[in-house]
Length: 113
Length: 111
Image 1 (tube, each protein chain N blue to C red):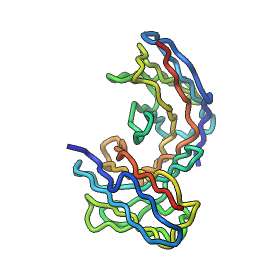
Image 2 (cartoon, rainbow over the protein chains, first blue to last red; image 1 turned 30 degrees about the horizontal axis):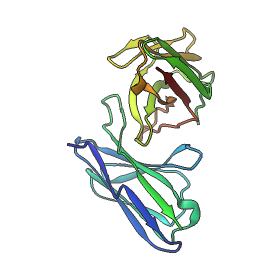
Image 3 (spheres, rainbow over the protein chains, first blue to last red; image 1 turned 60 degrees about the vertical axis):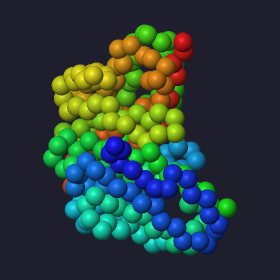
């Protein structure tokens, strides 16, 4: 049973399209995150939600909109995709107070053509 | 953002201990030192963390300098499955548990 699962694993799309990536965690955690890992392999936090409330938003373009329908899910919707959005996107979760260790999903590789 | 400095890469022989260093001279009193690793084509994985004292768990040991300006992750017996990028991170103590990843150290393990 995968703790943090992301779908799809691979996403290939054209510039200008809108796409979504879904994330679900079954660990009972109250905090979820989205990270972006670019071609140079740097991992950068994009967003963090605690109990469905946005708490970190790291200067990400407005085309990126996270949605948390409940604390087990954090989806990422991207409008008007650009070439520079090509990257691997990782979802993670943690529980505030219990060492705050983050558990990551396997990643979604997004390729914008 | 709190900054760490690690060697770009290191190499080890299988079954030998590996010491991965990290400098964090700007660490503040409440910053925890976390280590994560990322195996090829996988998401990052928690390894260990500490504040002031040395720590051991089933994966590794963490040795923290007395002034806390540096730390060393110790893998006691490297295996081929330990080949990964190892990230030393200062966990910023603000609500939201922000992790700021650096470039990390690429660990290569030779058989």
